[in-house]
Image (cartoon, rainbow, N blue to C red; front, side):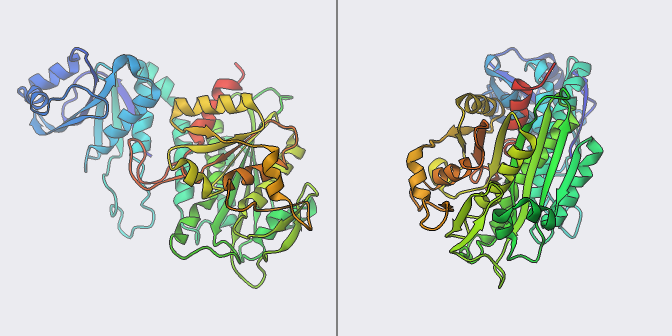
Length: 489
């Protein structure tokens, strides 16, 4: 993780420097100092590039003199429209423009100084790279940026604001790392081992093995796992930061560490992407690490179901009937609709064991949600309008955007089975809706939201603060949701 420090907003002795500049504002003192030190190089570059500070614009001055390897001007748009999300984006740009520089500085310039910590968070997330499996240490890295100093008028205040954001950034990075790992490494057992290391943050971690789940009647989850040589696990993480008797918030994640589709096998093209089918569980893990890391004043529980959906002589067959932990029976018509089976048991378990205030589940559940929303929004399904509103608002703040989709009794008819309580698919029409309608049968009256993150858990292009690859979608969203609505003072 990129190392962050804060210092006063004075011109450094040299090196790589980024200056954040708002549109329509006077040039800040640090710009004038850098311009003077470099013999007017910045002024000339601004004029040549017609740089005005427009949001997302950059102006790069290579070898400007005075000991600087490069100076980059980064436009952030109108100052009165700046918030944490925009500041993060600017920090992400700053982290991406330094080439092979190992250290750099970014000055807030005429940007509101209270946003220094958000700039730092954007820089940390923008500098992320996963290079564990290259044979040489620097292979595949776009840059070697290891440390950044944020120059601001109040370094002490910025450092204090950065402490909780740093914990959140670590949670996002943990999620990205988990989603990026190959499935031959990150099987259910290894995933579980990594979660148990989070006890060092103060999380309570319990693990259910196959025998435990059999006793609990997890027939739906175990049916998915029965074709794999890798044993399934359910992992429970608890953070007790609120009042002793306060009911927890429950976050539930689908953790299919590889999804071949089972007997209903997927096409070969793109199947390698199915290592990402545990992104819901990874997000819950990153969130719980973030809450513990910043000592959130809330009680929260994370429950993740970890399985591998494979093809073998013991694999679940289309047409099988399984009994879920709730007692409801399910006719499995398609073994590639497995995530909802995993969630069925752990949703019921979380509700029954913890009696939470609310439940939010996350899953790369359906390709249908990508057809509906592309890769810009995650699908939100809920039985509670107030919960939907607060989640959507949190997404607007963090940039992890949600779009509410419908639920209704009309869709239940599509799940009717001739031989069991329900079937696990409802056909192609409204596929993401019928999947959510299926999950709704396992939450009772508990306020509940389902986030289908199939289109947002992985990015095939780079954006500000978001390198290509695993996005960590949902960690900042749910952290903001908790912070804004449920933490005790």
